[in-house]
Length: 206
Image (cartoon, rainbow, N blue to C red; front, side, top):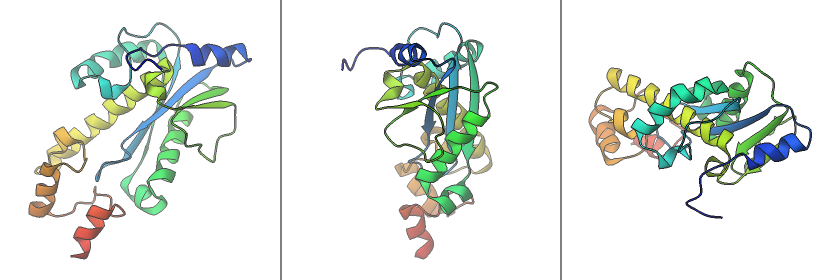
């Protein structure tokens, strides 16, 4: 695979050629952070995507934000979250699958084929699908979902940072950076921290 190639519609076209009518890309963001929800997005493309669309991690925050209006104008979009209590109760894998299911349910249409980033098959899958390794860099539907999920979650973490300053969430988005570690030492654990994650659990046990 060409690591510099942009995603295209090859997976979508193959699904349509096999009889699918509506193909949705699914991606998630926020499995690794110590704080905040995990967020998923489902996207059914309807028209031409903005130029340069690719894996959200390869785009600057400004570029991602600039793409959001164009993506919403050319697609059906569903967003889903799983909360911190759900992450702690279910585990991060199952909570991620729950967020993806909610994103799919939030779509205004019912896709009959799914393109899912990665190789982890949710147990609730009930329709034809492809698990696409590095899908956010290979499928435009998944890339769009990646950008929209990342932008949505980042905005949510920035909003939380206004109410819980000192952890650096406005820049680290809840990941375990040094600024976040320092904030935990100074301010302690909040209700938005994932207590099932080892670094937080360790702090609570000290």
